[in-house]
Image 1 (cartoon, one colour):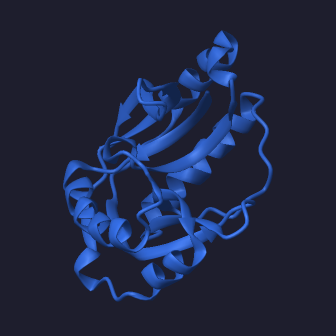
Image 2 (cartoon, one colour):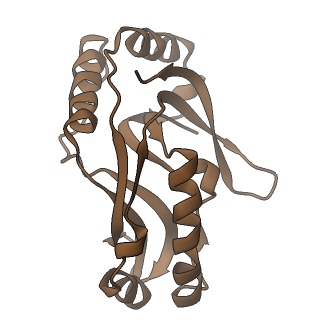
Image 3 (cartoon, one colour):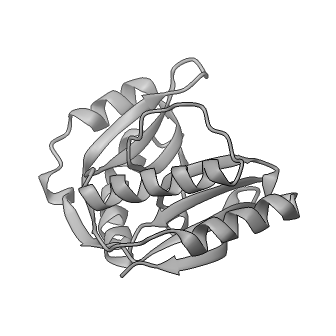
Length: 184
């Protein structure tokens, strides 16, 4: 499974986003809904099956210990979608406002990971929480056009975690923390 660093959605944000899911399920009943306990902003994806590499996990834990952390508001504002490689399918996400603290955390983490020998493809950092996968593009388009002012909800971010995915009994995935660092 995958190995990555993330900021989990705080409980208040998860509660609030759960309200949004009624619209997602109504407009995209075929969607693969992401479990609320899996909602997070990915800071750095390290790779698939890397969680089985004890050396890589140890280096990633070292990075987390060295990471300077500073609190920020986890501010969710509206929804959008990303197309996927699958024809007519998208990923629906909640936009997380790109506050200075979140961007700085992302940049500091990637710099420390590079020093530890981790390599990344250059990708723009677009902070978001994935809510559903395998969403029909027309439904995703409808969702993105709905006004969601009531879905703007900031809460203090609580931690940065090193996560890995494990198979759940129902065939889905659950992200389990391998290490956690509280935000101050």
